[in-house]
Amino acid sequence: MYVFAAMDYPKVELDNDFIQVSIYLPDAAHGFYRGTRFDWSGIIERVEYADHRFYAPLNVEHNPTGHDSVSGPAEEYAMFNPMGFAEAEAGESFVKIGVGLLAKGDSDEYLFHGDYRVIRAGEWDIEHGPDWVSFEHDLEGERGWAYRYRKTIRLVPGQPKFAIEHRLENAGSKTIDINHYNHNFTLIDDVPYGPDYRVEFPFSTREPLSISNLAWFRANAIEVDEPLRQKSLWIPVFEGVDPGDYNAALVRNNKTGAAVEFRGDAPITRMVFWAVERAACPEPFIRINLAPGQVQQWSSRYRFLVDEK
Image 1 (cartoon, rainbow, N blue to C red):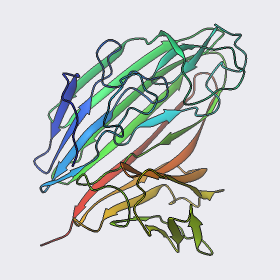
Image 2: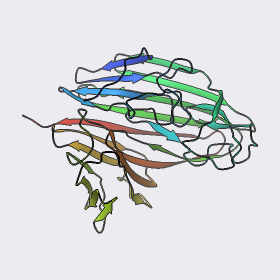
Image 3: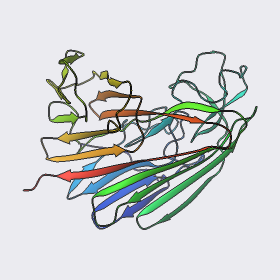
Image 4: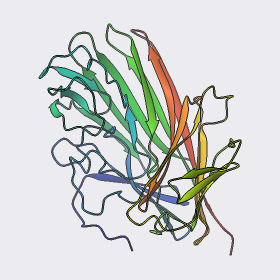
């Protein structure tokens, strides 16, 4: 059963009469997530639909500055090469989109789970209505790095769906060439991820692949043979040229008959699957390549499904 200490973290509640969505708001002093890995905006606490609950915090014991202390479709920019990191000296700044200006440590190797000091988080401009919320973050770093970023989460009228819309502008003088992915921390009805779940992709493996001797990637689906308990799964399920429809996955809880499906409009470069008992995570990666002044826009749509009784 999901247990989580209630805290007064700032958030907004959206409702379109079909789904109810609770979203944490970015706040450098009081926010639910203040780590240096994931985009601070649009961290979804939960979605409720037809008496079912989707998503939950990955960690029961919450640390707001922990690198993975998030929930739901959490997104990360530049998992391996943040803007300005390679050229910065120890103590100098680099840019993490959706987080802010961070200080490089003594190591020349960037670690996505590393402990980096926040030099400046910048200001977030937040607007919302009954069924939408928009976050804007403009950041000017050093040595020519700068961006303008907007993320909007919008519920689809009359349907159990929402969209995540992105707009990123290179406001600096250097080319931005990074990746972006959504970790999609998915838990349904507080049922631990394991044999009760099935994860499907719009592509198939040529031959069955064992995953940590606990699960299989067969045809277009991942199925688990036994409870994970303290173990985890990790497998790259796709890498290459996307024909145009590979940015999608479905996570289904066979025990409760509830599922969530996402589909993005940007071609992916890879899809990774990671899982522990508190989350099944299909992770689509896309490339962002922006010369100074250029803009890239992309979106993903989420649909919630429940078996008819």
